[in-house]
Image 1 (cartoon, rainbow over the protein chains, first blue to last red):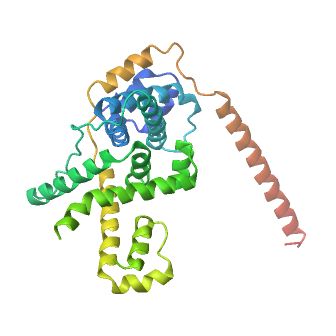
Image 2 (cartoon, one colour):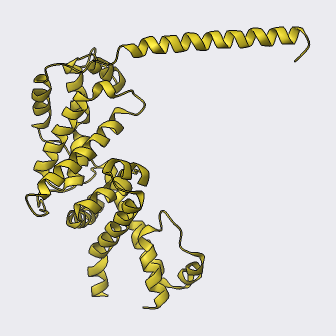
Length: 190
Length: 114
C-alpha cells in the first residue's frame, strides 16, 4: 500500500479506512499485527488463543472505526481493544476448561547483545515467562498491563471492569508470586 | 526472620507505587535481607518493563483472516460527516470572537482605558 516507497502514516491510513477503504485498513493490520499479537500472547499465554484474540480485535476495530476520533494513537486504541477481546475470550474459555499452559510460548531475545548476554538474558526471560504463565489470568493481565505496558491503575480498572483497589491487589499478588517463582530456588540453595 | 522483616516483605511488592512507611526505612538501611528483598522486586520490574521492547511475529493467518472478515462486512464504517462541518462552524465562531475581542481592545486603548 506504499506509494513511491513512502509508507503512509497511521493517521492517513485511518482517514482512508474511515471512508471505507479496506485496503488502507489491511495496511494498518499489517503494520500493527505483531504488536497486537504479542500483547494478546502475553495476556493469554496461549498462541492459538492469541491469534484468535488478535483477529477479533482487528475486526472489532474495523466495526468501530467511525467512533475513533483520533484523540489517541491507533496503537493505543487497538491495544485497549485487544485487552477487552482477550478478557472476553478468556472468560468464555475458562467456563469450559482449566487454566492451560502453552509450552510453546517463548519470548524472543533481542539480537543486539553479545552471545553470552543473550544466553543469560534468554535464561532469565525463560524463567520469567514460565512464572508469568503460571499466574492466574486475573493477575497476569494486571501485571502485563501495569509493568510491561505502563498502564495506570485507573486505565486497568476501567478496561477490565474492576475497581482500582482490586487492580492494586492483583498486581501485588502477581508480583509476589513472580518473585517467589523466580528466586525461591536460589534461596533454597543458600 | 525478624518481625520487622516480615512487615517489609508484605510491603515490598508495591514499593514502586508507594514508599515504605518511615518507621521501616531505618530498619531497611541496616538489614541486608530486606535490602536484597527490595532489590529483587526492582529487578523483577525492570525485567518486565524490558519485555515491552520484544515483539513476537504474528502468525501468517492473522492478516488474511481479518481481511476475510472485513470483506464480509456489508457496510463499511463511514466516519460521521457532520464533524468537519461542525469543526468549521466552531473555527468560524472562534475567529469572530477573536476579532471582536481585538476590536474592543483597540477601542479601549484609543480611549485610554488600557
